[in-house]
Image 1 (cartoon, rainbow, N blue to C red):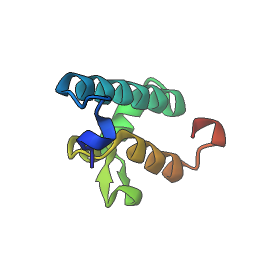
Image 2: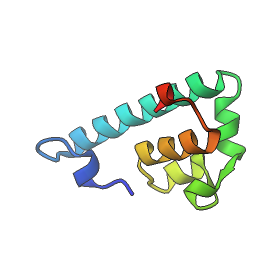
Image 3: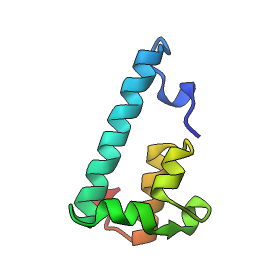
Image 4: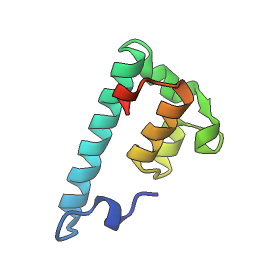
Length: 86
């Protein structure tokens, strides 16, 4: 789960936490698009259930507070992506 220790800035301000979360999610979605293609990654994230995420989709896991890095590693494992995507 995402928490202040994971995403907080040096001072732990809410602004620093928000900025860090946004950057991480932006990077996550960039990786998804690169790995799956612009026309498919959003649909895959909405519909594909991953055992690595406890039977949830990417969108469900992220909306329930899972850390973007943990979700990416689940996607990476599920798709058997090459090491360059890690």
